[in-house]
Image (tube, rainbow, N blue to C red; front, side, top):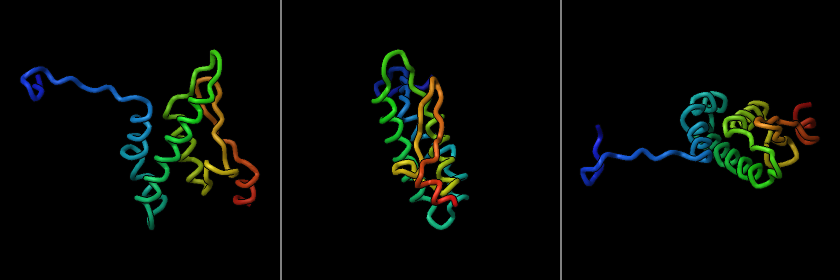
Length: 116
Protein backbone atom coordinates (compact mmCIF):
# COMPACT_ATOMS: atom_id res chain seq x y z
CA UNK A 1 0.00 0.00 0.00
CA UNK A 2 1.35 3.41 -0.90
CA UNK A 3 1.69 5.88 1.89
CA UNK A 4 1.07 9.59 1.70
CA UNK A 5 3.40 12.26 3.02
CA UNK A 6 2.16 11.93 6.61
CA UNK A 7 2.22 8.13 6.80
CA UNK A 8 -1.47 7.87 5.91
CA UNK A 9 -2.65 5.87 2.92
CA UNK A 10 -2.35 7.89 -0.27
CA UNK A 11 -5.70 8.98 -1.68
CA UNK A 12 -6.02 8.88 -5.43
CA UNK A 13 -7.61 11.97 -6.89
CA UNK A 14 -10.46 11.36 -9.29
CA UNK A 15 -10.16 13.40 -12.42
CA UNK A 16 -13.09 15.34 -13.78
CA UNK A 17 -14.16 15.39 -17.42
CA UNK A 18 -11.99 18.41 -18.26
CA UNK A 19 -8.86 16.71 -16.93
CA UNK A 20 -9.79 13.49 -18.77
CA UNK A 21 -10.27 15.48 -21.97
CA UNK A 22 -6.85 17.10 -21.62
CA UNK A 23 -5.30 13.69 -20.90
CA UNK A 24 -6.97 12.23 -24.01
CA UNK A 25 -5.47 14.92 -26.23
CA UNK A 26 -2.07 15.31 -24.55
CA UNK A 27 -1.26 11.68 -23.78
CA UNK A 28 -3.41 9.20 -25.66
CA UNK A 29 -3.60 10.92 -29.04
CA UNK A 30 -0.38 12.92 -28.92
CA UNK A 31 1.61 10.63 -31.24
CA UNK A 32 -1.28 10.40 -33.71
CA UNK A 33 -1.60 14.17 -33.85
CA UNK A 34 2.13 14.79 -34.07
CA UNK A 35 2.29 12.32 -36.97
CA UNK A 36 -0.47 14.24 -38.74
CA UNK A 37 1.33 17.56 -38.26
CA UNK A 38 5.07 16.77 -38.20
CA UNK A 39 6.26 20.35 -38.71
CA UNK A 40 4.44 21.87 -35.74
CA UNK A 41 3.11 18.89 -33.80
CA UNK A 42 3.50 20.23 -30.25
CA UNK A 43 1.81 23.52 -31.01
CA UNK A 44 -1.08 21.74 -32.73
CA UNK A 45 -1.54 19.35 -29.79
CA UNK A 46 -1.64 22.26 -27.34
CA UNK A 47 -4.08 24.19 -29.50
CA UNK A 48 -6.36 21.20 -30.03
CA UNK A 49 -6.46 20.50 -26.30
CA UNK A 50 -7.44 24.13 -25.65
CA UNK A 51 -10.13 23.99 -28.35
CA UNK A 52 -11.49 20.69 -27.02
CA UNK A 53 -11.77 22.04 -23.48
CA UNK A 54 -13.38 25.26 -24.73
CA UNK A 55 -15.94 23.35 -26.82
CA UNK A 56 -16.72 20.91 -24.00
CA UNK A 57 -17.33 23.76 -21.56
CA UNK A 58 -19.53 25.52 -24.11
CA UNK A 59 -21.60 22.37 -24.60
CA UNK A 60 -21.93 21.84 -20.85
CA UNK A 61 -23.04 25.45 -20.36
CA UNK A 62 -25.71 25.16 -23.06
CA UNK A 63 -27.30 21.87 -21.96
CA UNK A 64 -30.93 22.42 -20.99
CA UNK A 65 -33.56 20.29 -19.27
CA UNK A 66 -33.11 16.53 -19.03
CA UNK A 67 -30.48 16.37 -21.75
CA UNK A 68 -27.25 14.83 -20.58
CA UNK A 69 -23.98 16.17 -21.98
CA UNK A 70 -21.89 14.08 -24.34
CA UNK A 71 -18.84 12.39 -22.96
CA UNK A 72 -15.51 14.17 -23.15
CA UNK A 73 -14.21 11.46 -25.48
CA UNK A 74 -16.91 12.26 -28.07
CA UNK A 75 -15.85 15.92 -28.02
CA UNK A 76 -12.18 14.93 -28.36
CA UNK A 77 -13.08 12.70 -31.32
CA UNK A 78 -14.82 15.61 -33.06
CA UNK A 79 -11.92 18.00 -32.49
CA UNK A 80 -9.36 15.47 -33.76
CA UNK A 81 -11.51 14.63 -36.79
CA UNK A 82 -11.82 18.32 -37.64
CA UNK A 83 -8.03 18.66 -37.38
CA UNK A 84 -7.57 15.69 -39.71
CA UNK A 85 -9.79 17.44 -42.24
CA UNK A 86 -7.85 20.69 -41.76
CA UNK A 87 -10.81 22.52 -40.23
CA UNK A 88 -11.15 24.76 -37.19
CA UNK A 89 -13.94 24.03 -34.73
CA UNK A 90 -13.93 27.56 -33.34
CA UNK A 91 -15.10 29.43 -36.43
CA UNK A 92 -17.66 28.81 -39.16
CA UNK A 93 -15.70 25.88 -40.58
CA UNK A 94 -17.06 23.20 -38.22
CA UNK A 95 -19.38 22.85 -35.26
CA UNK A 96 -19.76 20.26 -32.52
CA UNK A 97 -23.41 19.42 -32.01
CA UNK A 98 -24.39 17.42 -28.91
CA UNK A 99 -27.08 14.80 -29.28
CA UNK A 100 -28.09 12.65 -26.32
CA UNK A 101 -24.87 11.15 -24.93
CA UNK A 102 -22.82 11.74 -28.06
CA UNK A 103 -21.54 14.57 -30.22
CA UNK A 104 -21.29 15.04 -33.98
CA UNK A 105 -19.01 17.16 -36.09
CA UNK A 106 -20.97 19.27 -38.56
CA UNK A 107 -19.03 20.93 -41.36
CA UNK A 108 -20.15 24.53 -41.78
CA UNK A 109 -20.15 26.74 -44.88
CA UNK A 110 -16.59 27.91 -44.33
CA UNK A 111 -15.46 24.30 -43.97
CA UNK A 112 -17.14 23.31 -47.23
CA UNK A 113 -15.24 26.08 -49.00
CA UNK A 114 -11.97 24.97 -47.36
CA UNK A 115 -12.54 21.34 -48.37
CA UNK A 116 -13.50 22.19 -51.96
